[in-house]
Length: 245
Image (tube, rainbow, N blue to C red):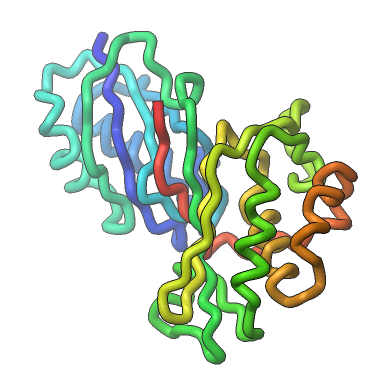
């Protein structure tokens, strides 16, 4: 039995998230369908590094599956890309040890959130970014984001219905960069709670609007109170950028 690791890019706009769901278009099901056609195996199961929600994008999602197919590993991206929707691209395939698991062996993930801070937004990129027309104080946002680094209980930065009982996570690195009218927020961590990146980004927007002071962030984290953090920003601005093992 071979264990194949895929690196995947996708535009999440047309999908109901990563996870397989009956009668709903999803990324996992679309790729599994293609692999089954290629390998002629009905028991293919694609395991991802983590689920992404409806509308969320990925530039470097990682998933793995087991197969008895003898197809050369370098042929899998070509074969799968010919059978999936154009909004999904397999960027690479690699044969891994049998015990490798995309989720359980993951050490770090990097997410990016893109904000269009121009007055009118973009017609072309409206499904790839979040438009906030009010001018944001990026200098204050850069101060605030550093308080999220380190190991914290992020109870106040998760959505209701989160299945994970342990809300302690470690964020290794943060950054905010500006390119023209776009603000790029990046977070690298050991893992993230449900909607955590979108809530942190929403909190940083409140800092940029002057509703929260940068030095209020430690107190908000310690409080564990969801009501004190910012709103959950919409999914289209979020990207799973990279997964590290």
